[in-house]
Length: 599
Image (cartoon, rainbow, N blue to C red; front, side, top):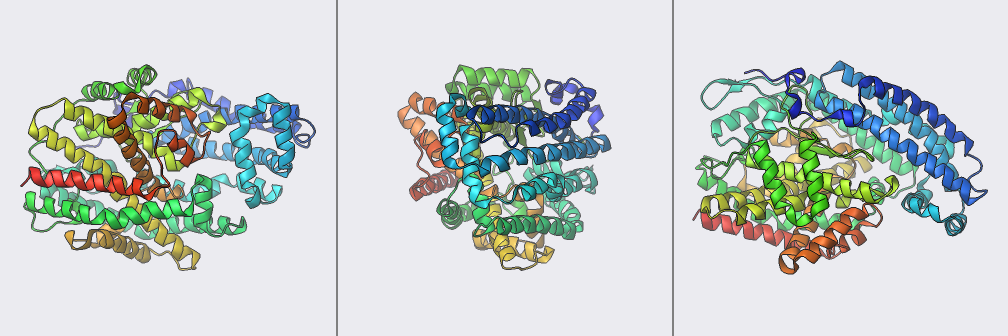
């Protein structure tokens, strides 16, 4: 079996980037003009404090430039995500990063001048010029960053060094997509099976055949081991960058700096990690022991954790059937949302191909003024339908936010980002439960719910706990070696799974699989989002459509409010630790139901 090359993939399985630019030549022309137009921002500098109209004109020019820049960068990054082994795509992405860094450097001059303005003057300008209300979110953010701002010259230099500052993530991504090759392995029937990053995570890790699953894991980990020291050095460079920036900007710690960017308090962050890590562990240990018993495993290994509990029952579906199922499940979200879904499926917003060099996992990119783009690797499984619904949750969020807010106010804190996506998974699961009387299908849906919580409350939460340890090491000046990172990951896993799971050395290398470590404190926010979605869906079950109406208003609000206030729009209080405990308790009830079904 050969892995498919990108050029051999049917067009209908790929996204339509022509909605961004009609051709690569059109993209190249816009890239050239973008850099030239960025120079024109200088006509506003030195005059922003003179009158409100000057500030307004400058902010309008800034936003227009950013909207164009987002399109340019999105086109380049999506092309590279489709095939990271394509040298032309690599070159285009590098060129786009260089140009965008130059644009950001010029924008930093504008921001530096705004930072120098007294807050009272900006407030006066806002009263004099009503159109400045469009930029209220941006101006508030600039003022909140004021205590941590460096000199204008330093900020410009840092902005110009954007490609260098982003190099750790670029190196990591390129290594995964372009350099990492995996050996074939002996499959369930003894035939040789091709292996790739995407195929392991989307297929073999979930295989119902124990020998196939374990052999694939050994082959997969063998390749990870070859890159362990390089990836450790790359990640250590990223952490060093973050720690250094936090110190020169005057933050108390790197964690404080990263939480500041999310508008999240230390207490909110610590509660999310502490409560789930400690209180979910006993439930998940029961789950692991149940799997060991039901699957009749000699031992529950780390690589067995995602094995299906009912291996002889795996509902298959097609992409087309899953699309219709998702639309039916999300019917309560209304006509505007339904219209977005119809467009997504009809107009190729989704790249679902399985090809060499394709980025692993799944994501949604939402360039302002165009439409969202979704990447995943489709495998004709119902689990894939949940993944698709998840990414469409991100798409729906920013489709609505982009339609109702200016560019500077579309994105909420990352603390809120995963709530709409996981809410969609809850809608889909409950829709499937009501659509069947088959006890086995109902049990399968129950397992998918647990899979959703496993992904967000276990996989990503444990990444967040690992990050917390790593930042402590870095603050203390301890070198982040491959050995330290592997041992730390193993300790985090051991503290959670106890004696329910046998952890091998390869389990300690799973930190190498995720790009989230290059995105600040992103991993823990998955659990925050699902916690909020769990509460909101519970309210919907009790109170009906008014809850959904409030939820939609929250999506449309984009980034116009702080995360706590934004989620309160939907009736969710994330300051209350009991909100987290209720979600953990709900997972416990799911596992209890599963235990009863296999009794």
